Image 1 (tube, rainbow, N blue to C red):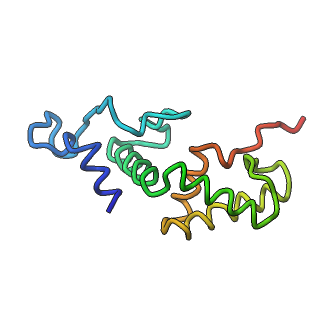
Image 2: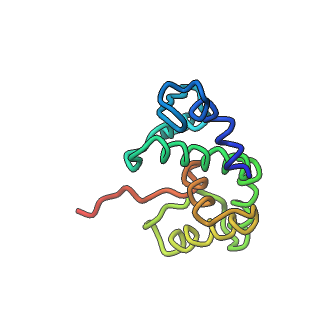
Length: 138
């Protein structure tokens, strides 16, 4: 429901009768919530159409509402507590423990918040809870 509500909040003008590009036509909303943060979520190289862009933006806003930062931070700490570890950024490829946590964390968050594992992973990555190891083998 939040995904569809996000479309109404973010994209209602794209579906308006007075949209010069027609229903679901091109509509550049310069003030969408999905543009905030470390990454420009207004457009992705993977998107071929404005519809794909609007779908991702609705996914993003719905996940931000369902998995707000304070509640997600608590869940994040709960997983570390289960392993008697101090909460920290999970770096894929840094260690076996981090690789294990990178798999377990989205599963735990998905179950706790009633969302898909993919939605949980995207939110965890957006908030830099899970990152990729950028060191290159030389």
